[in-house]
Length: 304
Image 1 (tube, rainbow, N blue to C red):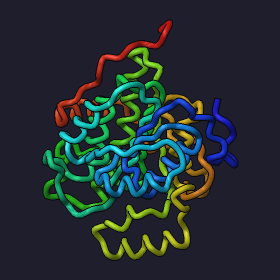
Image 2 (image 1 turned 60 degrees about the horizontal axis):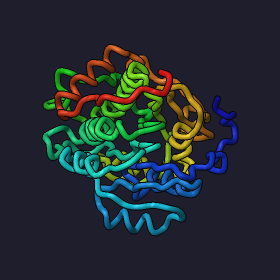
Image 3 (image 1 turned 135 degrees about the vertical axis):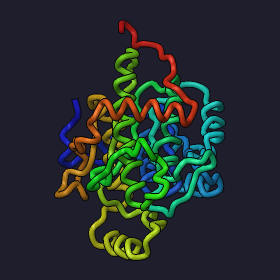
Image 4 (image 1 turned 180 degrees about the vertical axis):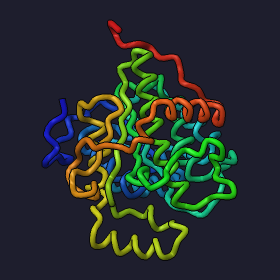
């Protein structure tokens, strides 16, 4: 079972020697902190990034075994190319990349950018890589999944005519948790030894908020980043805890402090909407239709 999380830190990560991890959005923020921790524990870590030059610059700062591969989650052709090039086992897939509160734009494939990047890109990537995954898929969500009125707009996923940056972001982060729920159900049904977990960083000072569509929210974020937020290394701890601790499938990890804003990683709750298996199955079906990627046939666990 999981160790007590009261003082859990990167020094508590078990030896990762001989293991391979992929971290999406790995060239800054939570991503590079996750890479540093896993590589520091002995893992070989692939930085999956949209801009390889920035990825190489980030990789050069990391001690340990790392490499950079191009991945644009807003382009399904790029997702397929990345997955097609994978060889061998993949112990950890960390679905970390994301965009937040951006103006209404569309992905290469015509999806609303926040849902397309934060959910659909990771949905396709995970299913394409799943035959290689031996241990864990960790998807980074957010406390924003609890925003009042947050739901999956199945009748209008792109939020045409009703788009607001906050509504789209909340929908995408709710989708991350429903994805994790249904992925774990399917892994269990298939007898796979792999597990799906999710995490959120609380309030972490990263450059994610700098792309907010609202100048007022950007200003508030800068103030909050300075006086309230954890740094990116502390913000990455829930992701790392979800990746390496012996947790039940579909676990959700966040900071233990007041309001889950900061603090040591621990198991946390989620909204009623994020716990609905019917919505999770419906979202999965829709995501398969939109991406053309389906749940793969997996080998069952030995003796399963």
